[in-house]
Length: 491
Image (cartoon, rainbow, N blue to C red):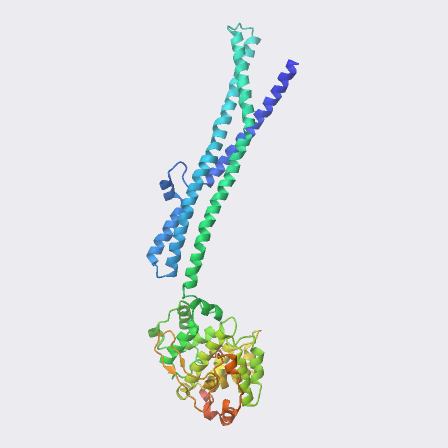
């Protein structure tokens, strides 16, 4: 019975010893990998660790960069805010790593490199004692104090067994190291998220408050909401510049500008900047930028939704009825589109006053600008744009320019921001009676449209039949240029 019990204890000890080896192997590997995850230097104080921590170095770099750029730039403000945020995150990371070192890394090190090796050392020492005693007995060597030696062996054996069983009993404590790791990580990430969530609204607020944002290719509504403008910045900037330096420029909007200058001007407008002095001598670049802005809008200024209604109006042969149909379509434009369309038409009407010098009659302007104001859902080919569709769009834009003060009565201030000293547009066509502006209330708008509220029939007839009254035809040189260099007409 005693031999069987000793045998069972021996098997149990062997099982524990094997488990000791496995636990040591796993904890040693985990300790090594976990230590590699720590970014700071182990064992150093907070100040020294902060200087070496990559996140803290990044934060310092951002703050220094913000000081170089200054608070007057969006990038400078963003760097300052993000640098301060990264510094807070770095401090949280330092505290997190200190806690991980104290509660997880160091206990794992003690377990793998101290506790288990000590047990294994005792086991080897006991094995050596037993081997020496068995060897002496086998050689019949008389041992003094043999009973003491045997008692010592049993003492070592019992101590070893106790340590191994204690090791097994403490497995729950060792498992808690990893639970502590996860809990500490969760707390660290929670605090980090609190920091990030607290700063994100501030960052977004600064971005939304920053006026200088790209406008080309952006939605008109988005640009106006962000900038707080009524008229899109590229439209106002280009119009006010052209009023100063381009009204008598021959072929304005028709002659293609230098591609490099146009690219540079568009980029400067996207930054909310326009060098008046640089471009005052190149009105074609300004006109090209205005056309590009209109064409690059995600939706045409006259809207895709109203495309069919505009085209139907252009097919009406009776000019009085066509004008009424065009007015009805105008009244359906969204407020932002209507304000910018009115602004642009008023400018084009003023530009037509100088058609003897610039050769840009309402018809000519409609040809080159119309496709940039209204286009179909599907992009047509160049031939189609130059034929049927273009003629229909000309039939829309030309009469609106000619009767600008009937469609949009009243004066208009072109230089809304006061940056360019452009003149105030006055009613330059007194042949037509006044009519409520399309942005008035519906109650004010819906009044009987009798003959006194429409353009004079003589004027409309002349517009269609006698181009010499208000729409001089393209000069032969311009017609030749348009036919042989279709690429110059930028749609």
